Length: 314
Image (cartoon, rainbow, N blue to C red; front, side, top):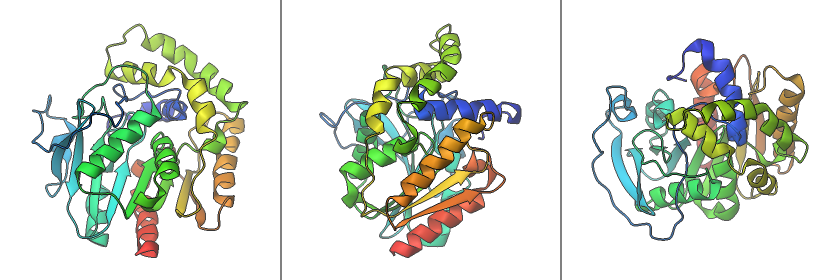
C-alpha cells in the first residue's frame, strides 16, 4: 500500500479485512453512499486537490478524471479510454484509486480495453457521506458511475479485500453487467459465518474504541462507519450468491489477512475454496510469498490473472 509505512502493513491489512471483513479499516474516510434515487448524470473537472499527494495527481497521464453524481454526492472516476470492453479496478477498504496506479496502464496496454478506477465515497477526491458504511450504497455508487460513463455490460471486475462485498452484491443483482471477475484476497460470503462474525467484532473492538477518541480523522471515520451494524450486515452478506453465469478467479494471499491467527487464516482459505467449488467456471490461485496486499506485493500476478480472465472472455 503506497500510503502506509512498511512497518504498519501487517496490522493494517488484518485490520482492513476485518473492516473489509468489514469490521475495520485502518485506512481513510467514511465509505458510505446514497441509493440510486435522485442520482443524476454529470461529468466535470475535479475539485482542486488538497495536497500534492492527492490521488488525482498520481494517475497516469492517459487517465481522465470524471466527477459523477449519485444521490447528491460526487464521486471521482478515472478512465483510460480503450475500445469495446471495460476493466474496472475496485480498491480494498480505505484505499484510493491510486492503489492501481502501477497496474492500470499495463492492463490498458496489454488488452486495449477501457480501464476504470475510482475513489469510493469519503476517499480520494470523492465526497464524504456521513453514517454507517453500507454495501448497498457502495454498489449504488459504482453502478451509477459506470452508467453515467456509458458502461452497462462486458465488464471485467477486479476487486481487492473489502471490494469483494461490492462485487458479490453487484454480481448477484446484475450478472448481465459482468463478463468475468478477479477477486483479489477479497471478502467472500462463505467466510462470514455465525461463528466467525463475533470473532471479527471482538478482534476489532479495541481499535474502534480508540478511533472514537478522534472521530474526525479520516482513517478513524472509516473504521467507525464500517463497524456500525457490522454483525447484521454480514449475516446478510453470508447469504449472497455469486451467479453461475459469471466466471471468477479467486486469488488468495499466502499469508491471508490473518497472518497472526492460524485458525482465522485457514477459515479464510477454506472460504475461498468453498466459493470456487460452487461452479466449474471458477479458479483458485494462491499468490505465493504475499501478504494481504497482493496488488502491491505482486502486481505481476494480479495483472496476469486479469489478462487471463479478459482473454478467456474475449
